[in-house]
Amino acid sequence: MTTLSDIMDNIHEPDVILDHVIQNFMDGEFYFGSATTIVQWRLENYEMLRQWAYPPTADFNDAMVKINSGDSVLITEGNDQLARYYAACLSVKARFLKS
Image (cartoon, rainbow, N blue to C red; front, side, top):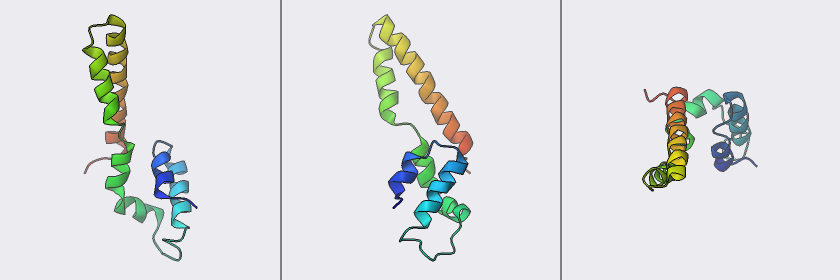
């Protein structure tokens, strides 16, 4: 049985795969017999999907610790990590527009 956790685990997959997981979830017990479409479900749960897509703030915090460590190797790693974090956030903003 597909659960909300399965949807969360597949949030970074292309939309066609994510939609398949959502459909499997909707084919389950809770939505059985419902006329709700994937598009409707995504609209009703848009805020949740957008939130799940963001990278964990722990990644940001870890990058900042490395950047402020005083160790040149860690500073480089932290800058790279921070750049990936920002890129991931911008990707979410592009995929799940706020308004």
